[in-house]
Image (cartoon, rainbow, N blue to C red):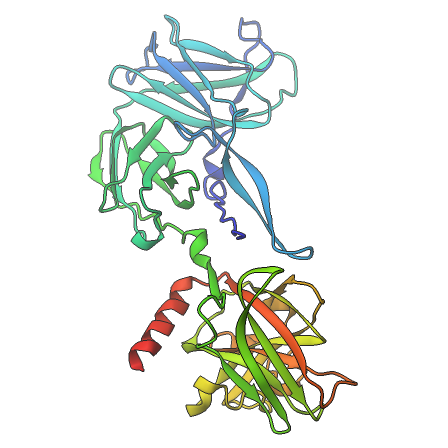
Length: 440
């Protein structure tokens, strides 16, 4: 099964927090190539001797060294999902931890040029933090130089808003201060607490702590020195990627939820499930015939209600057979919705479809149909009104068999299996069909 990768564009809102810190330090021992000079002061302005200084990559998560990368999930030769994601990296820089000298100074060496870092100073009870971009020097004797003044730390507590059903069983959630050595566990009520954070503006990020973790949204929040206030940081977790993949039909329990549909001078004598040597499990087998090019035949299924499928990315299925099939998402109004009445009507407000015609191979083939490949609304043939007109009010799905030239009056057949919808939360389908079953 293919999974869509979800992304976090977390640095867009945080970019303004980075400061370039290059200053001239002529004639001093700090004239060291690829160095950062850090001066730490106490709150009264005197040097903070023997103070712990931590330098970390700006994308660092404590306990989870990560970096950005690109990953693609391919659905077919012509369709794929490619996104930038957070992944574990054995090669990422963990950072540097050192202590200042008696003058409150320290030189950090061997950091990568044109890279973003965080620096935190930790005194016995006071702290300071800054984010900076380590740029390539433009002249000799110029190094990055940072002066930090310690102050009383602040605290923050918050709550994450999330859908319990989207959390995998046994998974835990943590909240991280991105770029720093801080994380907090989230309790069963979605609450978390940071008891001691340096003053400044920070990026908070929540993530699943599991092998196949999904990342949440993020929030930038300012921490004030000496403040110990309750701060609500609502971080909305995205759906589990698996929840956006719905197996609409695998035909393992038959074709009870499907109906035959055909016009006058056409028929569907066979709609059944069979097992085949070249396909694991049960598949649907359809036999159809027509005496006219202006008729239709097919099988359809009522989805349980009027569904908003605006978020649908694509539909995929396996099929083989003679000629072609057309896969259609329909809007049908009235009593005939449950048996596909008017499924091939002319375009009208009370009914219509968005569809795509596919030439079948004689061997099992997986077909992927992105919504933007549906036939244009300008082509009104067969009641087509286009995806934009149907997507918010889909009631049925239909698979039509196409006779084509030279096949009139003869029986044709196709086999179909594993119809999967991508991009729509599966709850929409499950709840609709459950409500329909309850009504019946």
